[in-house]
Image (cartoon, rainbow over all chains, first blue to last red; front, top):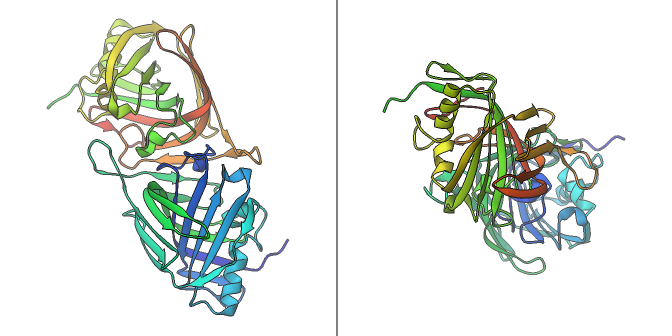
Length: 211
Length: 212
């Protein structure tokens, strides 16, 4: 099947309520039973067909009552308010997992696990990321605030550097693992102070990550 | 300080009772509080001073009541029965943390051990295919372990993931796997489908040696 030609590339931050190292990355079960997460990205280079997406941000808040693959999840997409009508539509199509080979992208895999998708919000998004330093921050003022930082060795208190590589992954090929915090209010509440986080360069196409 | 010149290089396989990916690799607490498991290494190339160690195997089983760094651990070592007297002495020195910096894996783990059972000299069967994430070892009457790929819970396909620790003291890169193991000797345990890894490592007096 032919898909619209699209590509988004740029820094991506994720934090979830699991312990650092998130067992789900390895097909383990979530640390606390349920899974709640916030994801944000700045698209440095991107397009959807002939619609340019450079410089735009998106945020996605997600939650499941158990492991992700068991379903019953909910999602709240937030699109950069600077996006015009066509860009908003393009980004929502990408995030919804449409125009994707089945199972090839995180958007498509997650979409099959959602029973509730909240109406998208179009808001200002603040975003910064230093992947090598494992330091990042994003916020949608009035909705969510999240940040990441290095894991610290419990004895020496030195930063603990650890990367996870997934040669066939549907989200990333290589990510720096970190710790993160998130706080979000209704309609999709998030609240943790030292959960899992990872930072990577997302480079996604209809056929999955390419780097 | 000058140490005896030594090196051991080869495949190493391990498994513990934590969830896949083992939180401890990220400095999180163990999945089930207690940490218990086992490991084995086959030395494809090795020496300790003038003593060659090529082809020899060694293994260990262990348990800690909580996170490793909180201490209180117990351990038992297993040395290939094919090792001669001088090779046994050399291997025991290495795994005991002698002739090396305090920051090596043997010494970091060693510093958390409260009780060490006498080492066992026994045959050790060992098999490892890192690329396929398949491996096993056994010390008959004491330890059995097998590794297979983690499976995607929905598609059933193998899930490939590697952990890379650029400054790691145990490994720099390891393939994640699913481990099933039992211990029937001094340290008894039985666990299914839990954390396992396969790696190719080299250790010397100053710790991990990059093998590229």
